Image 1 (cartoon, rainbow, N blue to C red):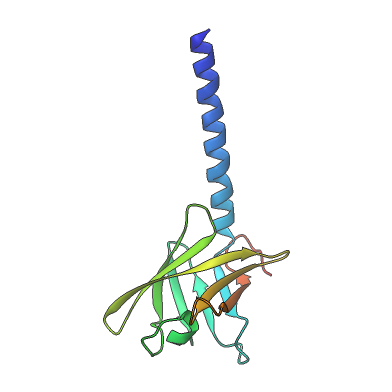
Image 2 (tube, one colour; image 1 turned 90 degrees about the vertical axis):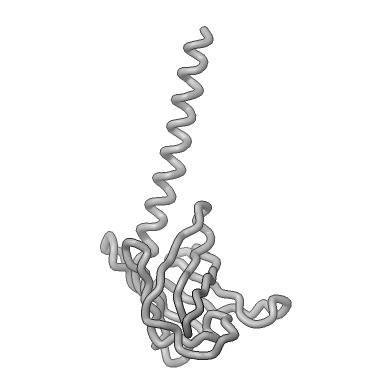
Length: 141
């Protein structure tokens, strides 16, 4: 009886673990591609997320990410998705300093958005990016 109960508990644990991991991987697959800044009238500012954790920053300034050190963001960096799938963290080197900056992922009806808080946290000013075109699984928004 004890062995049977233990077997059932182990089986339930594996099913729960697999389903959580599977959902995370599927969610991450749809993050790859071009993210266009919504708060930019020129429509030229983008972040591109690539397989393997590589990121490209196109026409982004430091203030677009809420960084006080002024300048153009480097062309390349790295990204990591948090275990809960809600935070996307970027790491890049600018002017010899390594930055670690995070944005909140927001799932919309037909797309995803990435929000960065900039300026004074009490003001709740957001820079928002929307996934425009993916480069994985043939899905585009």
